[in-house]
Length: 564
Image 1 (spheres, helix red, strand yellow):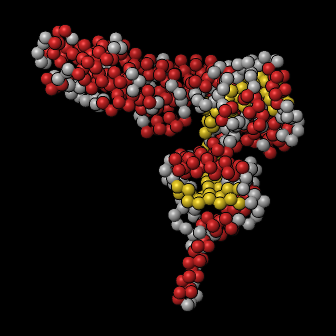
Image 2 (image 1 turned 90 degrees about the vertical axis):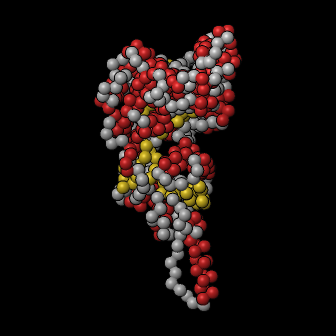
Image 3 (image 1 turned 60 degrees about the vertical axis):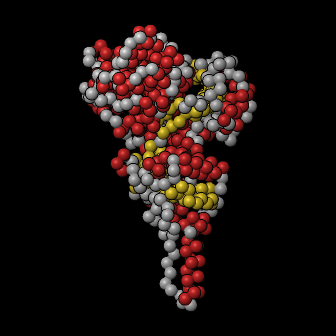
């Protein structure tokens, strides 16, 4: 800076740039700003004029301000020095990491290699990329967005998914690695980082040694509680029967006393309880630092406090996924038919909130009596058929004649949202057809399928699109094999509660993550209820698959066949 004060241009500005770089390295941002203030960019040579913008971006990133950094950065250009393009790309990647845009941050580091001139720098870039992938939260939406990116970027992300997933089955883990190697043949991570990913995945698969399982085994909720228990124990047995599982009965309602009995065995983790009221009881009690995986949703205050997590088959989660699927299919305007019940209200609210947040519109909604068999009233209201009839009467009165009339439904609807159990849906779908809505796509909740593969009874569900668990849909592979084993062991209860078996199965698969505080890493688990992931608030999400009724049977949808 002293030399710059006595120098003439362009030397004065060049010295100020050098000073600013040294100040930034020393983390003296105020001094760096003063140095840059006196730079005359017009006096710099053409290839130096980009450097002030790079320095301003690096300063903003150092202060944790990624958006200003990304705004000031120019794109790399052939006319810049290779080291300037390198720094632009590096700063761009860091800004994207800081705002949480993981797919495009990884892409930026992949593209940075084009500006690196030796193997050591390339190796350091890949090491930095891998380190960030191992630290960043992962979520299914990131992988969906990555489909538009290049194969190398997708390969890094998929390898991170493999490393950060929990694999109860070592064979499945090795098969996933072989599939990755084949899909991303020649990927730069194959030699070093694939082996590291497998090592990390193997470490994360170690379950807790002692588990306390709190479920109703007697009383009015005994049968569903036993279904969850059997699914849980199946996963435990298939995982090698490692450690101990102690089952505590919550059937008498005194959950606090059961919790104290469970704590007395010093478990590594507590799983349960199942009922919503009991979840709040456990959430408000001390567990001496022992993590808890509740198997239902409690109130908002019951989340992620003192290592307490929640895993639930909630109607809200499913309804939000329905809204996302509809919007992604271009279906943005909905009419909804839901039961007069808490389940119906919760489903309707969650679906409408998500769809409207994404830019969709809820045109109308009606409730129906769950015990009814005739739904023509709410259907006519939704489709505005009575309005059509009223207009016809007005025309007839005005003309003094009786012209031919055919009712017309409203034509501004993209799809029907239906929350209904299978028996009710079998009645509603034909009535929609009778009321001139046969061409409207219907997206229903998963209750539309009761698990009974009766193509004749389900013929009236033809064309309905709905979210479903792999446990129900998979016809081959490991999930299908496990399902068949359970069906052989417990045929009567599994037929009644297949999704609860899957729920218990996945509860066990989550244990290695939660017992080892894996919430920070946001692992992904492809399993029975869907793709599992842990949110920052301690709730466990599960991304469902999609199915469509075809000739009376639910058929899994491929990516290219998802438009109803």
